[in-house]
Amino acid sequence: MVMPAAIDITRSEDYDRFCHQRLQNPYPLFAKLREHDPVHWCEPMKMWLVTRYDDVLTGLKETKRLKSSREGMYADPLTPQNRELARPLIDHISLWMQNLNPPDHTRNRKLVNLAFTPRMLQRLIPRIEKIVDDLIDDVCEKGQTDFYRSFCLELPAIVICEMLGISPSDRDQYRETLGRLFPFSGGAGPDLNDAVVPAREALYGLLAYFTDLIDERRRNPADDLISSMAAVEADGDRLSRDELFALCVFIYNAGHDTTLGLLASGTLALLTHPDQFAKLKSDPEKLVEPAVEEFLRYEAPVTRAVRVPLEPMPFGEHVVPEGQTIMMLVGAANRDPNVFDDPDRLDITRWPNKHLAFGHGIHFCLGAPLARIEANIAFRAIAKRMPNMQLATDQVHWRTTVGIRTLKKLPIKTR
Image (cartoon, rainbow, N blue to C red; front, side, top):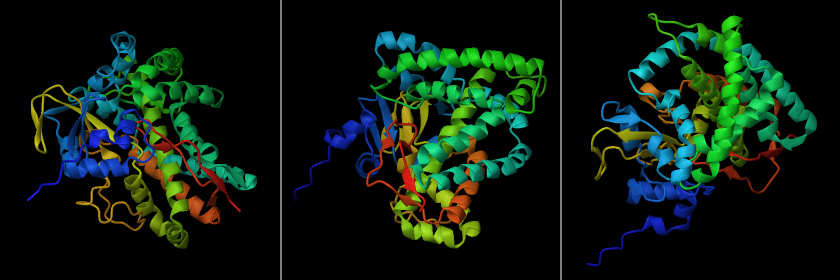
């Protein structure tokens, strides 16, 4: 009996594009990895890629043998010169909540939870509804527009800047500066070398901005999240200046990029699946919640979680050595046929929906409740107020940064 030849996934064009963050549709590659090499050493990116749901969930839950760290993911693909230039960036991102480990993570999360309360989120609902209605008014008046820029980009930016206490006059500059940090913070692999200098300059600009803003809020507290985080205290402990600065940048990213991706890809999913859009329009009050969860599964906005073993760690048929980077591909796990029936099909009635779009365990996304509130309000309004919305292009393009999956544009017409 002749055995079939093993598939060398690394020789495929999709594999090369993925390693260089240029792959528009990663799901066929993810399917091949899940089937043939679910725990795969990726030499160009200097890390392991994990694609099966059970393995990803195991990695997300494990806190004793795995630590959350992006040090190697960022540093390993860089040239020696860029590695030195990137040190302030890596040190800063290491203070983001998702990259902290106990006991620092426990302490920071406890303090932030005292400021980021369910009561505060509930108070935001009327304001979010007003923002959504105003944005949709503008979209409907235009008749044809880039919905990505006119709505998806604007809603989370307005909400998170108002929460933090960033003035409307500073909003565009703040967003533009963070946009230059994103290709590094959201990237991986050899292309990180091109992102180091712009991201480093952006980091210093943000540092100057937040130093002044945090000092002002400590002198004159306002009704915003920065004032609350600056004042919050538990068991005699407070957030340091560096921790506050890191949280301000992290909360914007967590509260903006995730929701932006969800709004854009969810809208595209409806427009390319008219049967599902018709279902949502038939009963938006009942179906909007499962629809949002399905959008999160179908196109997870945050596509990865990064861990490093503290000791040799069994994964599938491999033992990952201590200190090597593991990228758990959430987008691949969310389309695992062993967990989700017909996983490449959009089904807004899918329930229960055990997707991992917001992570799991102690690092479950801090901004998940806010993202869900914004998305539920937005898609309910879209179904009710824009029932004739159609896609105004034959081809869409994705931003291909490995860490975040979102569109570049979304041309639509409303009539």
